[in-house]
Length: 488
Image (cartoon, rainbow, N blue to C red):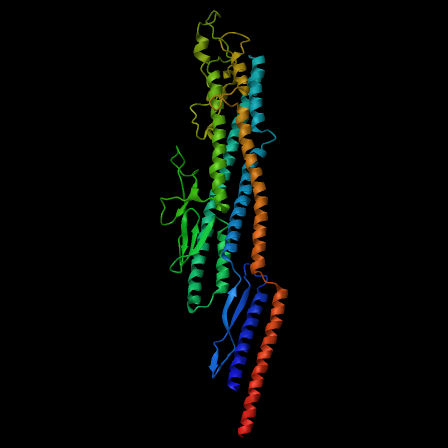
């Protein structure tokens, strides 16, 4: 009987000690990011039959379980992915918006209007060389703003491409870390115990990974923990990770990849890019901003520049420049000489491809060389003829873009308005997703967080159990001594 009491007391003592150790571990990690509260699960030891009676044999530890719920974890990861997507979208769209805001004191719309107005002024003074200089200078400002917008779009694109490449490096480090943790967890749990702290570390790594793109996790029928990129495929399978890699595409119509876009693919499958399949997280936001807003703006600005060149040149070529009429030795005009010398001049350089038109738009060499090559008249040798200058000025309000559906002003304001609309929407989405993420974190904290008050109460409870078990052992010892005394 004394031996039974001793074993029962010992089981209670060891169990209470383990519970106090776990409680102390909880208290020590109360402020550790990603730590999940652990709890000792106890069960009665196997009973012992003695005659007609079944006697208890004490207590034993069933498991040390961490507070964890797969659905809560999945919701948190999804919330992280959604918020990081909106946060990065707001950041990148802000950079794109600044391209237009930083020249807002002038603004492409104002610059274009001033260009057309200078042609209108030329129509009022068709022989005035000073007004022609104003036309040329305003045209240079238009060209400069097109170049500036294109360069800034290229800079944002290059910055995004660089961030995509850096993100891929971070992802590869994380997936290697997760694969390593999978191996360590399998080794530690081979005996049946739970690797709680290692699982917490893996969950933290997964939450960081979820910042970059949507992830999915599951355990396959072989017990391997699988991490996948949603819509793409697995990136970690047990102790093996798949590296991502990046490559630069060659833009259409060019032979160099200098201004190409970064594409993402599995390192062992370089010919199969996954870039467009990544729909969330910071990586998804970077790719979407680059592929949608920047490409869309480039197309619209190119159409604006290309349309301006074609429409202006189509009118300007029909006109005649402001040059003195050639005369013969007797001072008489030479018939048809004017038409041969000063008609058919382009105002802007041609040919100009639609692709990258904003980058390559420029004033023609003839206009650069002599402002008197700027045509105002539709007929040669006709003083006061202003029909070409007036026709160019009227382009300001004519629907010459989009197959005759849009003016230059409407095209530009549409471009600026769209990016402003998207930027505003992303800010609202960011605020909403921040609230959703805060709720998910709060729910996770309620489930797995450490309450110091609760742990302090547990410590007292387990300490009392420890002391009570010690008293059982002392009682058993006294019983042994009493029996020995009777025998002695």
